[in-house]
Amino acid sequence: MSDDELTKFDLVQLIGSNCLINIQHVIKGDKTYGNIAAISPLAKGMAKEAMISPKLYFNLVEAIDVARKTRELVDFGIMPDWLANTIKKAKEYTEFVGGTGAKPEPTDDQKANVASVDIDSDSVPF
Image: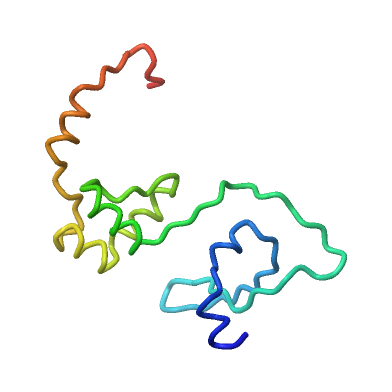
């Protein structure tokens, strides 16, 4: 791909595509990391598989921009907690929430919405 093609290419369109991923394991200290060394299309004759997990796209810069405009917290959606917690350590996120890594204080509207929710304790599974 040329530099111009690369700047116009949208990686999001690849979410859910079948491919072969070459993982290279690197040992640093007492930890082993699996790094992506190469990605290639399926070999001829290989069957495409259906996705097991739901598609997930998250762009922290876009999420922070939306949160600023809506005065809401960053929405991590269906993202696993371990991944959301890792993202919350990012410089961009900690700067957004005031450098503490803590969640920003909810607005009065958010507090009112939480306070007005009625929960039927019989419907809670625990």
